[in-house]
Every structure is written in C-alpha cells, then in structure tokens.
Length: 403
Image (cartoon, rainbow, N blue to C red; front, top):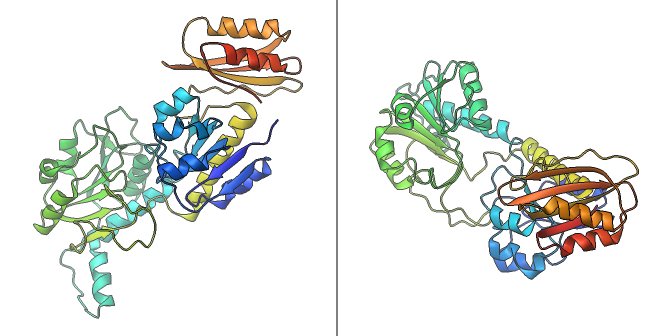
C-alpha cells in the first residue's frame, strides 16, 4: 500500500497527528487556517486533509488541479458548513466529522452560563475587579423551578435538557423533526410557544436557510418578558442588533453568546466588534463551546480513526457526504473501492472488468445515494493492476483505488 500524505490545519490536537503517523501516514501539521489561494497551493500531493471550522473548502479549491490526489477530508469539529459537500462528493472526496465528541463540553458551558445569567455573576465579577462592592439579592434568582427552552433537540440539546432537569428545571423543546424526549422533557409544537413559556432559551440548530435570522426582532419581542437567551450554535441565527435593543430595554434580562456572524481569523487580533459589547448581564465568549482539552482530544481520536479506516479499509460508515459502506476485512484478499455515478448497469460493468482481468470476487458491498454509488470489492487473488485501470476507463467512474 503506497504511503499517503496528510495535511492538518488549525492546531488540530496532537493526538490526531500521532495516530495518523502510527498508522504509517506522512503528516504535515500547520497551526493556522489557510486562505483559498494558499490552500490550493498547499494541497499539491495531499491525500488526506484535516481542518477545523475556519478553513473554507469551496468548489474552486476542491476542483483545483492541485487537489486531484485528495481522497478524504476530516473536519475535526461538529459542523461541516465550511466544506462544499456536494462538490466534494462529485469529486469522489469523502468527508468525515465528529458529531458527538464535544457534546458534553458545550452542554456544561450552557448550564454554567444559565446560572451565571440568573445570578448576574458576570457583572458582579467585573464590579469587584474594578473595586466596586454591590452585595445585593435584587435581580439574582435560582434556576430551580424555571423553564428551560431548548431549540434544536439533538445531541447537545438532549444533554442540556438532562442536566437542566437534574438542577430542578422544567425542560421543553422545539425541533423541526420528531425527537424522543429524554427524562421529563416536553416537546412543543411551535417555536413561538417555546419562546412564550421559557425563562431561558438556548439555541442548538444548524446553519441553513431556515435558521438564518431565526431569532429576529419579532421573535425576540415574543419571548417571555425577563427571559434570557443563549446561543452556542451558529452566529447567523440571532439578530444581534435587535438582541442588543432588547437587553437595553430590559425586556430580555441577559444573554450568553458564543458564536457570531463574523469572527476573527486568528487569536489576539484585537479588532473584534459586536453590538452586544458592554451591555449589562451579557456574557460574550470567543466560540469556545467545544474547546475543552477532553473534547479536542476526543475529536482528534475520532476523526483520525475515520480517516485511517477509510484509507486502510475503504470504510465510509461515518461519512457525511457519501453512502455508508463498511465491509469487514478478511485475510488473504485484495480490496479495491469504486466511486461512480449512480446509474443503472455500473455493477455489471465492474464485474465484467474484474472477470476479464482473471480475478474472482470474494465479496462485494454497494451503497448508493441519489447521485453516487460506492462499491467495495474483495478479490480472492492478488489485485491485478488491470482491474483498476479497467475501472478508471468506465464512463461512469469518478474514482477507483486499490487499498
């Protein structure tokens, strides 16, 4: 099996580099994200690419001649909005992410911020640092008995619901898909109903056309008077100007925001500006919801493992843009993978190529989506180079690889 080159960007946890190197891969690691032109230049000769949230993998990058050897992308984070998934799929590039590894870290941050907002701890902390002593109970409340409204009841939302319930909160949630409630959480039929009932509203939704500007001026006005808003999902979900007005008028008693419509490219830039700065009882954090040592190490292990398994076994079970395919390895076989347009007759053509090369199929597994098919083939005999060459000549082939 030829040695593959890996490029890791954005200070991915060292455990990922160690795992990839231990698997026999050649790894280059950079601390920063790369712009489009820099990335195109850096991809020459790269087979596996690891990124976090700042690197933008556009169709232009993916279709560049320098990316012709790229096989897979590992997003060492939850989201994959930074990757043109459709363009990657059309190129035969498999994309992996880590949807679960930082769930607990985000959930714990949200619960901590709920208590901080309810006690106005951010303001009290700032005052004491400045030499001002304001010992008072006014505006400081327990969270027990309050209603926690979760918008987006996925992996993070369910964790927050359980933790909130352990602290004595009533938990309600709204999701566009039917979700099984955990504990005593109650689903609500509409977002508006949740906003009307909730003392704390926390957002955990993806970035798409439906969620952009979801918490606009009208919906912020519809929130229960004196409620609090938390957002650790995507920066485009909340109208920050409208939120600032609601906080100044005290209709909303406080907010905790971890994500923003526009975020600095690097640390210590010193030029970050938000309409929420210097508002009372407003906690602003620099997109650190999942940034704990435990979460980053777990993400590093999980995504690196997915990349290694794809390289060694052709497994796509954890991919976000490809059909899920995972065939157990057997001893004494040769394996190849074939990515193709999902049209009738491809399996017939593949088997013809294999037969004409004098090879015998030991096992096959095919998975498809609307656009592409992914086939893993095990041959009883040593893999004949003619097989891969023959597959690459098929008009329906996107990519073929001998493992």
